[in-house]
Amino acid sequence: MGQTIRRSKAAPRTSRTTQRSKAGLVISGSGADRKGTSSSLQGFDSLYQQFIKQFYDKENRPEAKKLAIRLEKMLADSDELASSIRGEEVRSLIAELRGNMVEAAQSREAEIRKILELHALSANTPSWEYVSREYGFSDVSDRLDLLAILYDEQGMLDRAVSVLVESKTYCMAHKIEFDGQALLDELEGSRQISKSKTAPARN
Image (cartoon, rainbow, N blue to C red; front, side):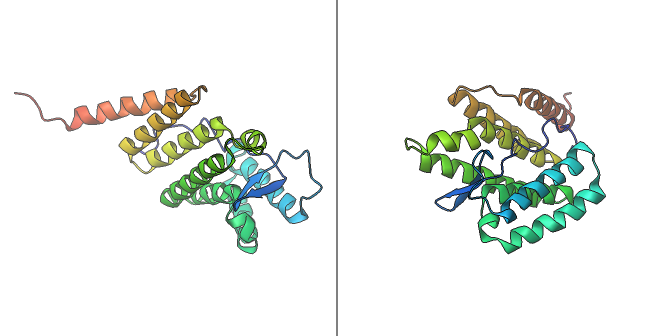
């Protein structure tokens, strides 16, 4: 297994630049309000966008690896960035680039956990409108789908299917579209084939 899923989603939707924090969870702003944005944070976002372009759009891994080193240095130099939702996402992408799918999955899980924590903190508060624009329910589902891909690439087919089912259930609960159905169908089909091959022959 491991290569069953073709990545139909590169990185989740994250093109924001303004950084704000709530209970230690940094979220990315829309860019409309940049007055308080430091040059270092803007630089990190710009570098992140270059990394995504080289890694996914151009599939230029050598150049992406050079950018990854610079991103890692910026994370190491900023506790705020290092502990942020974006920081977890970047660590996951860098680990994926380097072929470390275990670390990539761990960072993606941490990213999802921090988004859900942010949702819990901001629900039924004046902050919810802003938070949900930056990290909405569909963003959680997107990241769960990406996590499933990482498990599949490790050969953990059952775990990948389980995460996709979790994503589908999450979408149903929040009345949003589940766009990972093709991935789920493909993995479930692969799992059925795998089971049929390992099933004992009947006399």
